[in-house]
Length: 223
Image (cartoon, rainbow, N blue to C red; front, side, top):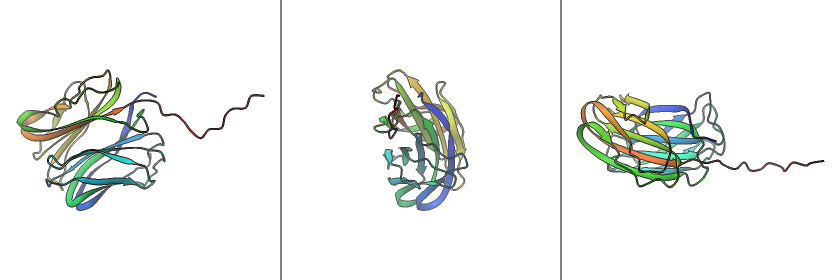
């Protein structure tokens, strides 16, 4: 199965708390899909302590940087999520929170995370995560995010597709997320251009594509 972006699950902007939940909509999240959360807090020094959902699927904390307070988490959906189910992020100390959750397919069911990188950009009209170490296989999903304190929009570097670019009223910050699907090994960076100069933090994670074997089927009987 090729790597494919299915769509946005939810974008959130929430008041100060140690728990922050994304709610699944009417389309649900299919068994075999892969969910990526990109999120952050206003307050420095925070870290994610866990991610759970209503059906008990397992998530990993892929980028958990208390300096940039930029978080990326992911999970393979072994049990489908339905309308009204939640995906809940826990952080160590209460803080306002913003982020998005996106569904993809075509990612391996275990050991998906390959490379990550974070970066703090000085005041500039451009932003970058800086390059990862070389990916370990050709077909991978790259996801990136950048955050800053101004009300400024971003234009993605040409090989990336933007997913969200919004100003959160509760956090008072702006966040952009983007993705690309690659077919060659290499060192990848998330990059974009701001409408005007600002300082920002940025993160990237790459995930291995590949087919997942279907288990639990009975063998065919030939007569």
